Image 1: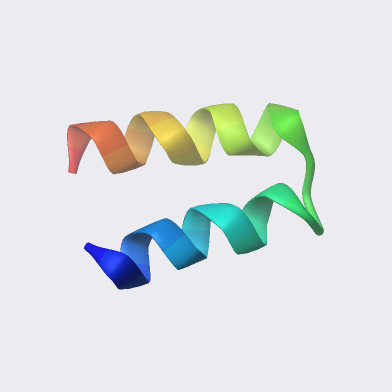
Image 2: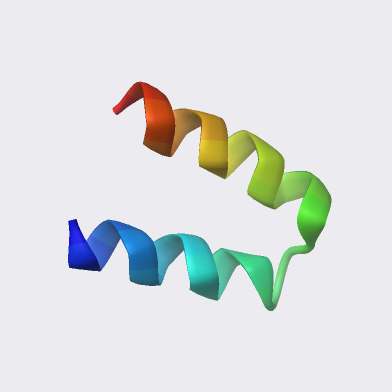
Length: 30
């Protein structure tokens, strides 16, 4: 779970809130 959280945080910086929304949904579904 820690790796997943780090991935989401890293995505928040380079991509943006829009991409994070999709990544966040995938994380929740996963």
